[in-house]
Length: 225
Ligand code: MG
Ligand code: ZN
Image 1 (cartoon, rainbow, N blue to C red):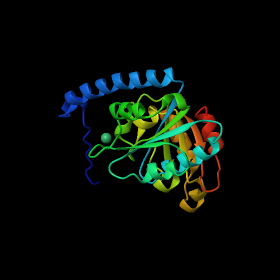
Image 2: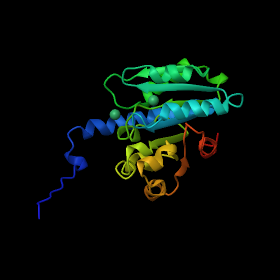
Image 3: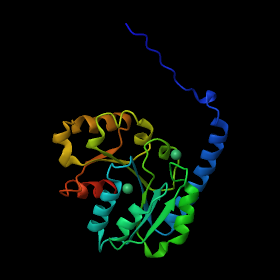
Image 4: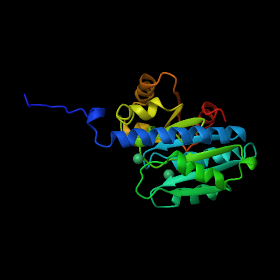
């Protein structure tokens, strides 16, 4: 038998944990203020999280098209350096703000504060916030959104959910995306849905395909939109 060892990082051993705790506390305070500002204006914000290539932008485009004439929508896009996603959504006639995070692999409440200050909240009902493509630290950084959506695609394989429990714990809705490719990928979509519900029994699951429009209405319903 080959020797097999497991090292589990404990909180108190992590070097940046003290700084980290203060940062998260500060972020939580700012997020609570953001939520207050959004609620005061009757604006719903959706934090859209998921890996690069999961289909976050495409899903947002698809939802924006269906909500046309029903809701006044804006988009805030987080990206390390490009403006590709904000440009894409802007083409659907939606005001968009790009946040380039530089070195940071997540959006935080302070960046969102700056962005919502730039938007005319009185003229809006809804803001989609596309987080940086990453399933780890966005879980720790609340933005002050009323809803949190995680997008996973069937092309990412069968372990995407079980390997990222924190982000699913903090989410209200999961979209299992690129459903049209599930058969080609040989992926068991029921198992993925079950994984999400095991981690978070209250999570709502939508099975979506931007390509054929499947599940987009269900996703909007799950988000209460
Ligand atoms: Mg994107
Ligand atoms: Zn990060």
